[in-house]
Image 1: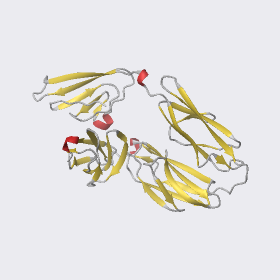
Image 2: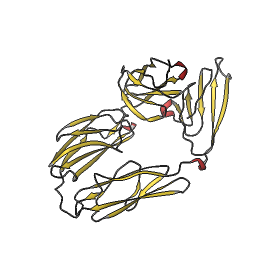
Image 3: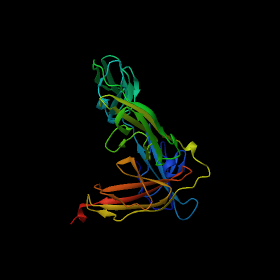
Image 4: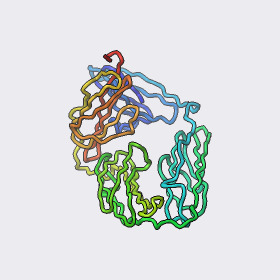
Length: 346
């Protein structure tokens, strides 16, 4: 993250890996706002230049540079946090039920023996017919690697017939922008305890129970979201049938005649608080809004215009980001800052 602070009419940051599609700008440069963070993703040693225009027109400007050094010795070592099978590491003879391998790792690229390259927290379906050992290997950028084994076992007994999924569909599988509504419909037979989840599974993701024929509305915020329907057998809950749908965001499907986004206001009711104190943030806009904050920029949540969102900042400075998408797919981003300071505590 680059943090410019300046006095002047407008600022530009130039350098590799800046993100003009989020902040506004063009190839190799981004419009800068004093006091607001700017994201950049350099792949090698890089120099970034800030140019700030003054109030007196052409020739009235100032520049400053900063260097970013890529140091491989500081790269995180590969770590495997989990490697499990869902719904179980045991299966019926003949592989009647599909088994999902779910790897979780960081600090490198992963692969599973007999499967190939995999992504962290993204399930991989397999249908073993005998006792099988799967090995997850993660290789870091400095060529170090770690491995973990997972044994999937044949139960050796006849299990209940798996339920049948007749339909698991989405009203749209390609969206113009994050936060659009998608209707998921499920139809199944010979099953109970049906759930729709997002993969990877974690406490912040979707996990709802559904009945056959029921439709639910979701609003995916990621560029690619994997929804999975899992139905358990009426007679044996260890026997399940699963089916997945992937919903992607692609601006090429947007309408050229769609409306532009507009942020009318974005503010917090307090600018400085005691750490952990409640703060209310209210965004007012036209379009589809997503809210996130520093330290978890990827954890967007859908917000409604005029909604009062309560937060509890604990850091010295916490930046909250509102991104609003128009129906034409274009984004508009605004930031607001809240400080946490022990000196204001009573």
